[in-house]
Image 1 (cartoon, protein in one colour):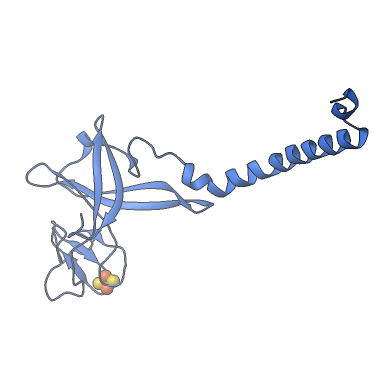
Image 2 (cartoon, rainbow, N blue to C red):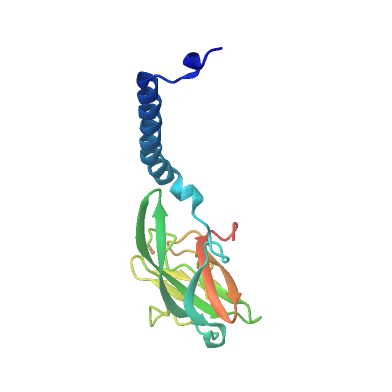
Amino acid sequence: MSDKNNQVSRRQFLNYSLTGLGGFMAAGMLVPMLRFAVDPVLQQKSAMGDLANVGLSVDDITEEPQRVDWEVEQVDGWYESNVNRTAWVFKDENGDIQAFSPECKHLGCFVSWEGSEDYPNEFFCPCHDGRYYKDGTNVPHTPPLSPLDVYEHKVDNGILYLGEPKPREEA
Ligand code: FES
């Protein structure tokens, strides 16, 4: 084969160069788009999973239900927002931590511990006089038909972490 056959013509050189440059530019645009598309899938969860530090030391939890408020970052696809959460937290007679959702199981109003002077030592919903015993079970013949949801919880370094509230049979 002669040297002439091995030479690259000016036209071929330009073709190769422009194809290479075009491919490089296309990759530069596609990689960030691909990264954006799969980003939620690549997010790493913290060591505590979806449980959030609610800023309460276990030593400060008594047998009296106390209201605990905290904020969680909610990611819905690519939309991130902060959501307020509330729980009623206390230790039961066995010393186990209980964390109940304040959302009434009737129509979702806010349930408070001893929210009515007429019903001491109970959770009370003012919307339709819904009542729950201290263990979160609904008082028969009041509007709620099921117990308060229970937050999944963990204790790490003496600090309480709460996750999602779940119906009792799943908790
Ligand atoms: S919403 Fe609570 S009793 Fe109706």
